[in-house]
Length: 510
Image 1 (cartoon, rainbow, N blue to C red):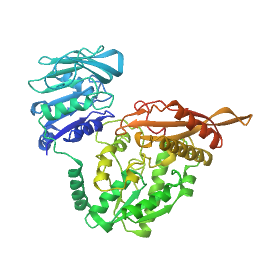
Image 2 (image 1 turned 90 degrees about the vertical axis):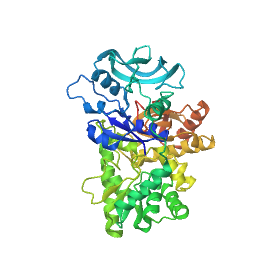
Image 3 (image 1 turned 180 degrees about the horizontal axis):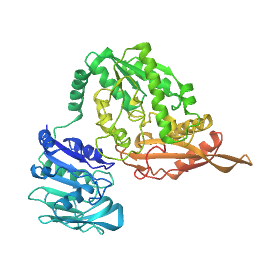
């Protein structure tokens, strides 16, 4: 199977490059930036991509690739920092920009013969850099420019080395997927033979080989990720799979009833139910730091799993619905990317947990998981549900988790979902919820002054959760949601609407 290799120089979007390449049905894998040339040769990719990254090529200790990579004969595309690496490596000059270029820019295409084949002469691209090329190397030509970057895209078309200053992998670049497809399929000649059918087949084979006759405990939440893992494992190992649903008291309205019914009646998979709400709430008492909350929840999940294993085991494996975004944001990928937040099913589980972790979806993004779920005949009730974080409402409650804030977040989120359903918008947005923190504001209810909580409504559109944009709801619908929350949810005086996209914000506030 043909493949493209991405060398990770620390960009938050390194995995997203892989995802975009795979959109064109070409298999793509992420490797550390310092992977030796001989290892890359053994892997045998059709082309190589250098990711972006936060470093400067002139900084001491900045990540650099094995120089022999340039002698292997593979086409190479450098993105942002990768672009600067190519400029620097071949004798060009990089300088610190007077002003950091961040956001959308008009890319004027000067050469449409290969990398920009079939694109219009002008397109929107996403810039995020502080350094820029002052002088391009000999043998390279300018393929595209912006108002602030005369060499936004360069190429040595004879050797098939290319550099682009912008990020084609994010949705903010209009024709980014086409650019990556041009590089992977046209320039690198990789055949588009990768698909989710082959992923399922390969994954089931790998699970059977790795797990053997061992028993697997699978933590399910009712979300699409863990449900798909359960369906995949059930197909691979049958009765050696045992699922557990932990009610940590931080769930949406009637979540536990719905999940149990769907698994039993629609999937035919038995679940061990554990009501651990009291112990989670007790452990979270007095904890307000977001990372500490995630660690506490991860550790308490582990305590529950150990107890379940003692009563129902022995188990050798713990399976979880970890995805690419979880891995990259938790900073446990193979590259040097910064930690954004610890996910309980990645970095939150303690080292003393005496079970090996099985994460069959950790190379996939959410839309790919949905495709796998459809192929595995997962019921539509699971497929249409919005993503829900493993730590539950704890990451939608800013500061300490209290009974009052928990009630407010749960009740307000239910109203948000109900109104989106009524407006026929629930299935058209990626995620929607109500968050609450410690901030208060004065309101007037029943002619009385009330000092109550501020609720934050967060509704976003996304394709894969790596980037997201706030949803432009009709004003009338926002007003209706606000009116219902202030009237129906006790202790709330103000409702605000979050209009921050990702980046720079994250989807969940904690």
